[in-house]
Amino acid sequence: MSLIEGLNKILQENLTRLHMPGHKGRKIFPEILKNNLQEIDITEIPGSDNLHHAQEILLEAQQRAAKVFGAQKTYFLINGTTVGIQAMILATCRPGDKLLVPRNCHRSVFSALILGDIIPVYLSPISHPKTGIDLSISVEEIEKKLKQHPDVKGAVLTYPTYYGSCSDIEKIAKILHHKKKFLLVDEAHGAHLALHKNLPLSALQAGADIVVDSTHKILSSFTQSAMLHIGNQYLSTEKVELFLGMLQSSSPSYLLMASLDWASQQAEEMGQIKWEKIIQWTHQAREDIRHHTNMKPIGNEIIGRYHVVDYDPSKLLIDVSSTGLTGIETEKILREKYRIQVELSDYYHILAMTGMGTIEQDIQRFTQAMIDIDHKYGNPHKKLTSLPIRIREGEMGLSPRKAIYAPSEKILLKNAQGRMSKEFIIPYPPGIPMVLPGEVITQEIIEEIEIMQRWGGTIIGLEDNTLQNIQVIK
Image 1 (tube, rainbow, N blue to C red):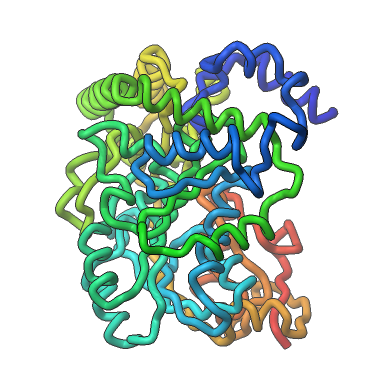
Image 2: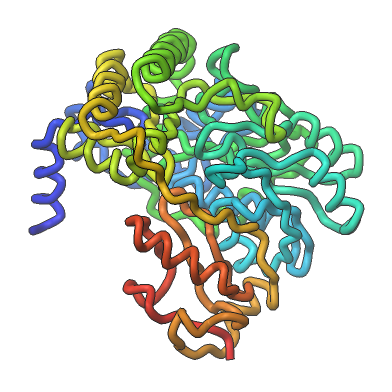
């Protein structure tokens, strides 16, 4: 089957899309983007400007976006949030510099550390005691690591998390700035936060110096498009522009850039109204699922616990374990029986994502399906086997960059205890590495991989897709 045929097959399923991108496949675009894609797929010609030297319509579009999202300056990204994360880290750190890095950050952060030969000082996240999902980075953890490593240049944080929980980055920003250090924020899941007062503070509002938003995840731009925002008016942008020019395509897609301009215009014109509705719809969904099923919607009850200061109410994170089903089983039932596709599932949860293209019927269908699944497929007397909760911070034998270039050999994963990994081991989604290059593999990690395989989890990063073998450093 060709890719085109595969995409058409998905299209024919007529799925309710509670996953990214935020437009949900709906035609919420201006006529030119709906009907003239081929005609406006152009290159740098007179009148179209140049992303890498924006002076005309692209400069104006980026200035409009900066105004909408509260930035000093905004850059359009056509290589995803990944390129923005890499650029902001490489622009603010020199080779050999130390950077505070949550151990649960996205793989793109670690790729930036490798590219720039930057030394991570790991921050340990606060995890849920039952499910193990990472919820926050505490202020105390920041203060402790700053005391232990006063020479760090700054910190990069994920805010909010994939699951919607928020650390106190406003306080963290003040602590870092008091010590003349910067705060970089991966706000991949928070492009919408500035659009409504009942959403958590945006990272820019909280005082971050540079922020990267996955505009495509929740707003209405096309997949692979994103924005980098400068929050600190005193920050030199020369290196940011230098690294964006090095890392981004020299043939940027005008379709992606046009969709970014449209996304910021749409956010300004109707963002507040749209998120007012989404907050109401998801609140009702949580209430209905809580009262009519054995499932446990996650929401404001975690605020004030686990160092969480806020929660994004537009996310629908449901703990389904009390039904006797795993999240992965529930996701499969939703797709096969109800034609609903959610964003992700793990052993305990499913996560449904809303966005600019979400309509009330999407949430109603999801809610009714969850109630139906609980009644038809659930067994509250069946108890899921508890998974071991691993402390995420591993022993770093080598820096990630040195490990990438070190000689290696292939051995059986079951025999890898005590060896340093040459490869990433990444459960996906959400794309948070379980093991990094240079980290020591423990028996605990080997057992966790085996458990994930048994309950149907997906792991990427290894050359051997069967997960039987792993490259380790000689």
